[in-house]
Length: 308
Image: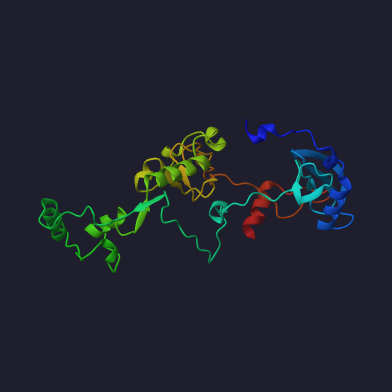
C-alpha cells in the first residue's frame, strides 16, 4: 500500500486550531488590514493543514491567502510551513500568456513593422532549388535550349533568381517567374488550402450575403479573374458599390450588386415638340379695357402685333 493511501484526510486537531499562527504569518507576508476573515481549511496530509484567509487587497478580487502549518510526529507545537497568495474559483486573473506569434491577428501590422516567418512555416515550401534540373546532356535540356533560342530569350547562368531585370513576357524566364522559380519559397499545398478556407469564410457561399444574392460571382461582369490554381475557385471583385470591392471572393459568392441581377431600363425620352405654323393664335398686347368700352377684336390685336 502506498504512502499516499495511508494518509488521513481528517485535519490534525492542533494544526486546525492554529488559526492565529496562520493569520500572523499572512499579515507578515502581506500588510495589516489586508488579510480578511478565515475562509476555511483543508488537510494536505498527516499533520499538515492549509488555512485560507480572504484577501482585501485592491485588484485581487477572489484571491485568498493560503498558510500551511505542520506538526512533527508526537510533537505538540505547530510550525509554519508556507505562506502564499492563491487565486480562488472566481478570482480575477490575467489571461494565459501566449507567444507573440500566436497573438498576432490580421490587421495588427502597421507601417514599419516586420513579421518574420518561421524557417519551418507550413504555409511555405522551397521554390526553385536546382535539384530537379535536368542533366546538361539530357533530352529535356536540349529541348529547352532550342526553345529558348527560338524565343530569343536571355539565358543566364544559375537560377532564375539571378536575373538582373524583369524578364520579357512570353520568355522562359517569365514562365519561370510565374511558377515561382525566382522566389526562395512559395506557397505550399497547406498554405493554399489555408488561404482558400480563410477567403471562403469571409466571402464564400455560406455567408448571409451570398445566401440572399440573386446570382453568384461566377456570372458577374465585375469579377476579375486571378491566375494560379486559386483562380479556379476565386476572383477579385471590382464593383465599387459591392461590400467585397477589392477583395478576393469565391466564385460561388454573390451580392446584390451583381451586374446582371437587375438591369435598369433606359430612361424614356419625351417626343420632340410639334410646332403648327398653319394657325395664328391671338395674343393681346394690352390688357382688357374697362367696362363700357368696346374690346378690341382678335383681328385688331393681331394687327397691332404685326405693326409693332
